[in-house]
Image (cartoon, rainbow, N blue to C red; front, side, top):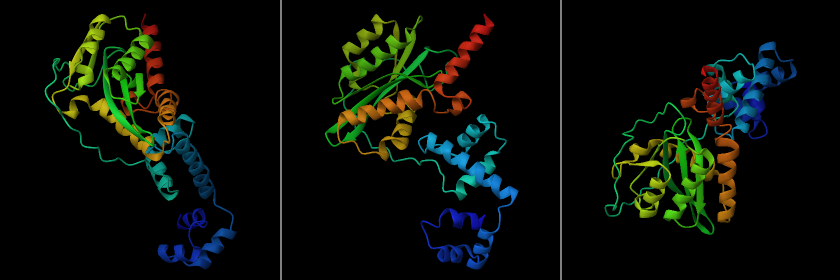
Amino acid sequence: MKYAFIRAHCDEFSVRAMCRVLRVHFSGFYAWLNEPLSRRAQEDARQTELIRQAWIDSGKVYGYRKLADDLRDQGERISENRVARLASLAGIAAQVGYKRRPGRYGGKPVVVAENRLEQQFHASQPDQVWVTDITYIKTHEGWLYLCVIIDLFSRRVVGWSAQSRMTTDLALQALLMAVWRRKPESRVTVHSDQGSQFASREWQTFLRQHNLEPSMSRRGNCHDNAVAESFFQLLKRERIRRRTYPTRADARRDVFEHIELFYNPKRKHTNNGMLSPVDFEIRQHKINQAGV
């Protein structure tokens, strides 16, 4: 496998330098290069290309567990350990995390709802509990603020809004999209932090008018809204921090592509049994139909 590594990276580094670092003789490498690949080596090369393609299709963000699941979906018989080994040799790795920008907390909000969620981040059916939060995206024009509404059942983003100002309207537009898309038939708990957008009179009025029940995290406790926090970490790690946005419109288009074309329909979630939010909801719908 050392020879295979040298061959894969010969366009980047000197062959002699790699042989020296890996403690193999360069004449042995060239002799190996002129010999036909063994059946095992051919299989390694074939599956490495499948792993690389699955990694590229994920936006270069999947780790070896999700890549192994992707290959098994394609009918490959392959273990997670083998995927990890081949991916490592090919330089394929998941994106790593980032440091969260420290926040500031103002005075006590006028309206503080009960924390009905209490860090119970699972729902048995769609549209039982939605969580919401706001983050910021840097562009050359200035900040673009993004608010999302996430269904805890499938982790699907059911509503979102991106605007140049972090106002109550930003949050209301995201919630309006969620209500319009989902049209919930029963009462939905909507969990947020104690930000001014969620404590405003307009937000509280909208909740009452649409049969939505407010819930709020404890002051300054990000763990009370961990699902929304996790989504933003993934968004920034897998998308935003890998791009430069000249305008807010560019950033908004990229957010649309990530949420609507990748995250909701394609991105695998451990919480969903390695299904995307859309596929998980489709499976649940089929189960419900079969039980009728």
